[in-house]
Length: 148
Image (cartoon, rainbow, N blue to C red; front, side, top):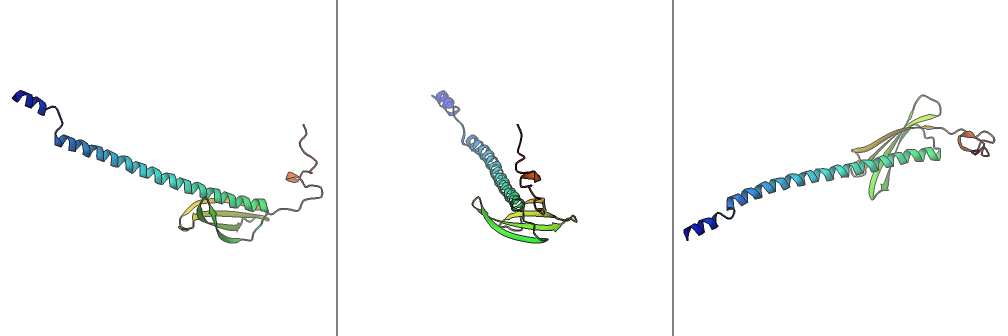
C-alpha cells in the first residue's frame, strides 16, 4: 500500500507551487491594469485636447463669418460644449498691416483655467464695401455663375 500512497501524493501541486503561481499571475495582472489605466488617461486627455481645438477653431471661424473686426485687446468668455464648461481667451493684436489683425485663441477647461489645452492663431481682415454690382463671392458679379 505504500507505493500507492507515494504515487497519489506526487500527482498534484504543492501549496508552495500554487502560491508561487498566484504571485506570478497577480504581478502580471497588476502590470496589465496599470497599462489600461495609462491608456484611459491618454484617451481622456486626447479627447479634451480635440474638443478644445474644435472650440478654438469655432471661435476663429465665427469671427471670420460675422465680419467682426475687433480692436486690439483681449476677450474672455465661457461656453458649454460636449457636456463640459470651457473657458476661452481671444487676443487681438496689430500686425503692422492696415486692416489686418492677428487673433490668438486659447482654450482651457473652466475648472482648470491655468492649463491651456489648445491654442490656435489666425488672421482677420476688415471687410471692404462691395463695389457696385459685385455681390457674389470674391467680388464676382452674382450673375457670373459657372458656365458648363
